[in-house]
View 1 (cartoon, helix red, strand yellow):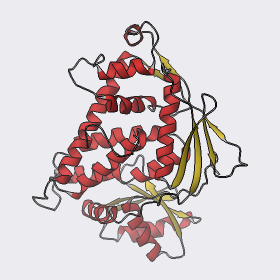
View 2: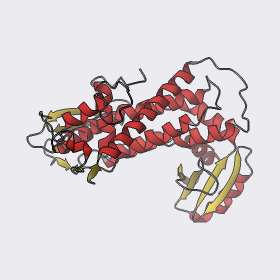
View 3: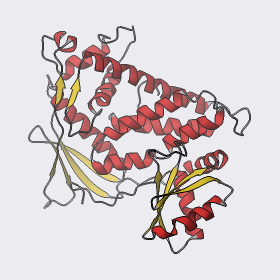
View 4: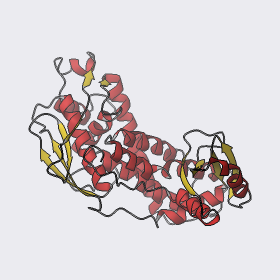
Length: 359
């Protein structure tokens, strides 16, 4: 059990990892393997890790076999595991062929859970707003992983999680406080800052003064983005400068989501092969999208939406730098889906179906 949630959540590896695992299983049927995406590697940002389960002595033999495969650029033993870098053509082909074929977890597959959430009474403190943000995102994350989620009102100002067993003790989901610095942000509202004050500042452009019209849905998404900048058990410090910086970041993220959606809807054109311009773009995008489902599964398992903010920020940066990728390329559709899904899980609305600036 994980805080009242069954530990049966399947980590849905990305399409490149699944393809590599399949090849390894065929060649080495007596061995088990785990794979991942290397957080750091001298081979590059899209490097995969391969670890034989239970027999590290096999690493050299596996590396020799991988080095002989046409799809592998280099396989380097690293302390009981391997770092594997595919050729750009193989990376792109494996990813595009596997993305649409990926199995999605069926709703209700992992059983029911219940989230007791504090009511957001007006005026709502930022501490209570952060708890509500975390609770809404957790409900969406657990649903995404296959749980049926019932959201109820808590009897106190805490978030509680329990599974379908009525005899099980609910687990309190701790969410740390928000510290608003004594600066222009609080001064605008007489020294006390509430959720309503923050949303008003965003809607009425009191932060950047750039003439941008931002609606209620944008304000809700911004609050969710701001409140999950750090893990939920760490205190969150905010000030006028930080809020302005995060507004700019969210604008860039939504612009990237809109760009990816526009490019994915365009008819395919140009050469389908890779060039010196497109190869680093392909590697960069796949390096961000490949681990996206694993990261979402991790956020659900750890009961913390903070990894979603890192996912959408880094993916948006790669999309913004992907100008050399032709319109209509299937990577645009995968990027749009991964980014929109991250936004919806971070800041779900009532029907889980709208992302501001995208739909």
